[in-house]
Amino acid sequence: MAIAKQEVRHIAKLANLDFSEEEIGRFTQQFNSILEYVARLDALDTSAIEPTSHVDSGSHALRDDVLVPSISREEALANAPESERGHFKVPKVIG
Image (cartoon, rainbow, N blue to C red; front, side, top):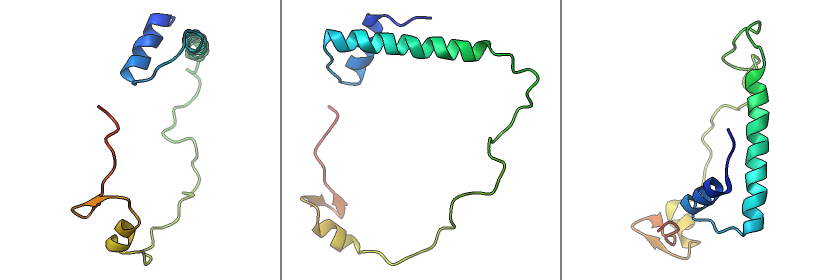
């Protein structure tokens, strides 16, 4: 399966991104290289490999959650350019 320039343009439009024709060409080549690599991986015979649910069977590297003192909501909002009803107010990003 190959990706055509028109499909890259469509993806860019959905993501509200504007690319030059040179960038569209480069991204098309990069997408196709990735798809070729995935196809090579898909062709590998993994029938003799036992499935695993997690690659690392060791202990968790994450620490336990510990409650620590933090700044109050009022202090956090005092640093914001705008706030509304106890929340940060940010500009609209997506139309």
